[in-house]
Amino acid sequence: MERIKGIDTIRFVCALIVVLGHFGFPKPDLVASASNPILFAINGFIDNAFNGPAAVIVFFIISGFCIHYPFVGCKSVPLYPYYSRRIIRICLPALIAMGVYSLVGLKLTVPHYGVFWSVICELIYYLLYPLLLQVRNKLSWGKLILPSFVVYFMVCFTNLDQIAAAQNNYIDLGALTWIIGLPCWLLGCWLAENYQLFSYTATSQIWILRAGIFFASVFLQVIKFHVHSPFASNIFTLNAFAFPVCWWLGLEIIYFKERIPSPILERAGRWSYSLYIIHQTIPAMITLLGVAWLQGAGLKIVQLVVALAVSYVFFLVVEKPSHKLAKYVSRAVRRSSTAAAPVRAVSNRVS
Image (tube, rainbow, N blue to C red; front, side):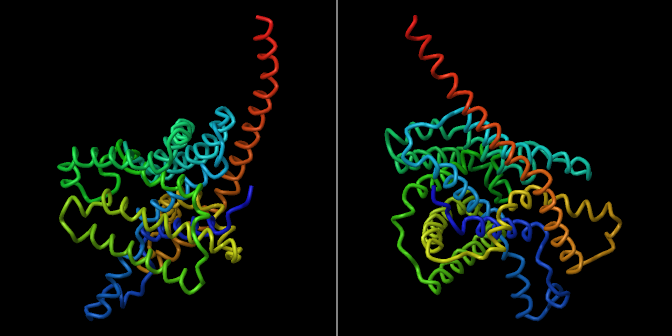
């Protein structure tokens, strides 16, 4: 199977956006406390520049792409190998990360569980995928995406008062969030089958597209915080954002078929999941280490550096071994299933 270049780079950039959205960008005190109109505008832009929830939408689409890509053209999924690999790969690092949260005194509240809300959504999508593939084989991803949006809108409009009373967050409907994100994930499945329909884009054009996606995410962040309407909620705006993101990712995939992505960013993308699930423990760790006297930009720089270092260690100690274990168990289950198949066939013939 052809390796898709550039996906890991995009994963890392998105994980970094989530981190900076939580920590804040380390800006000079002159900008942070500015009364000058120009500096005030710069400060406002920086405060809205890192839209973490928008980055999660990119994660959802990439996730759908990566799950379906190996099974494009397949009639079914080998259930036991598939489930063992996917569940171990996503759940084991997440469970250990939750233990780290507990050790540093952070409580994960139901039903969001901090950043783990998106992990829970993805786990649900992984579990549903074999069934979704069966439906797709009878219909198409387009005919699956459309009803998923219908259900999404039904959920939104039957809970519009709750959305209006909340804080314009993507997770404001709690346990129903996986239904909100499902259409975005299905767009990734569609992209896995159709990315070759996209044409090559020149470097100057791809950077214009990247800038467009970035500034669109900034604009949606401004809407979230400054427009008082349920339709300004991320629940509505980010699912609309998923369409241009899907188009942009298709162009990125074709672009990187001809171009070599940054080796540093590609390698960093391999531990972006660790960065995503562990970074919120870093402020508490720094406090426990007794360096809470740091303030302003200095504190944010330390938080970012420590987050990158701790996440990489977590990848080496937890996530990478989890990947190896997931592959080992999946292959063992596959071999066991293959060995058992002739026995069942003989048994059926005898009976």
